[in-house]
Amino acid sequence: MAELPFPELDAHSDRAVFRQIADHIRDAIERGALHEGDKLPSEAQLMQHYGVARMTIRNALQVLQGEGLTVAEHGRGVFVRSRPPVRRLASDRFARRHRERGKAAFIAETEEAGGKPSVDSIKVTEQPASPDVAERLGLAAGAPVIVRSRRYLIDGQPVETAVSYLPADIAKGTQIEQPDSGPGGIYARLEELGYRLDRFVEEIRSRMPFRDEVRVLKLAPGVSVFHLIRTAYTTDGQAVEVCDTVMSSDAYVLSYELPAR
Image 1 (cartoon, rainbow, N blue to C red):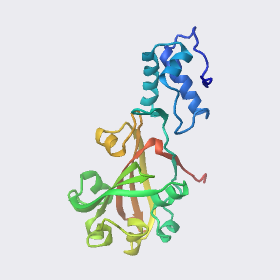
Image 2: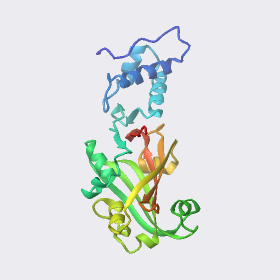
Image 3: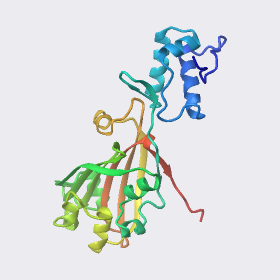
Image 4: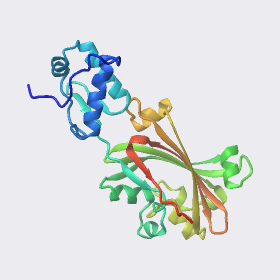
């Protein structure tokens, strides 16, 4: 058997043996001895290396799966989870030049990362605004809004869901109501309608996903989500869209450039 890239157990440690084993494998992943997509040694190999029972190895592997570092494939083994992150450049992602090139933010940043972007589960409805959405848009509670919900995928893997709310008196009867909102996305359509965008305000928090989010985003156990709410404002200060987004935390690196003046 080839030598495994793990140290021996520390017999003097008060840390449980299965947690020591999980620490060794995690460290191997973090320092690059095991790469994304690599298959971990089999349970039998790990049992022989550490001289422990199968249940101890399974407990260690369960820890790693719970942290979202590995994924078990039935009949094949356990693999280092492979999900290349997209660097989400908050200071650049909504730049007008992307829209002018006919690319919405998600498409531009995913292609920059070398991934293949796609969108599915698109649904467009008209609904009364909730109190929170109405407040953010400066509308009366219950005022009609156009609601666009969709799911974003990278290389066929779901990474994000988003629901946009736009005042019906702006979006109704426009291409924004169509499943395909056209090149550059809804922000390009808003600017074509005369609502020149000036700034975006985002609120981000991290939390564990709800059950339906685990299903829709196909999240591994232990993977958290970023919950982001963004409001888009025009040059005259009018709020024209609220976007409620849930992002798989292991699919994104949130990167910001902030002026010091």
